[in-house]
Image 1 (cartoon, one colour):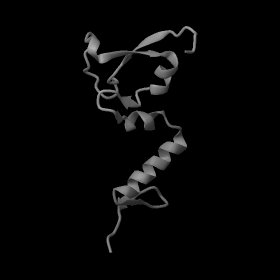
Image 2 (image 1 turned 180 degrees about the vertical axis):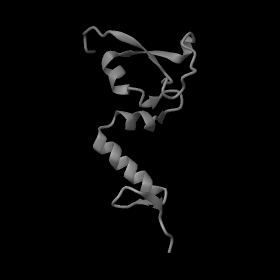
Image 3 (image 1 turned 135 degrees about the horizontal axis):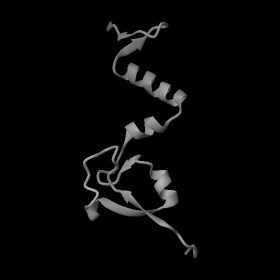
Length: 93
């Protein structure tokens, strides 16, 4: 359809960030991706489970985004952070 040439690169279906013990000699654990899709994937997806690798996404985020995620998780798990940066359990009414 596109009519051009594409260089394919080897890619782990299950990223090392998800499974460092994946056997690199097992052909079932590899796929071919073009360079563009290899960069886009960036270990954000585990192709075997179809789940997002949230840890890798947050690692790649800029500092302000990491801070927003951190503050969201603090609140989500029932904690608060005071003006001095001390985190404590939120009091229940």
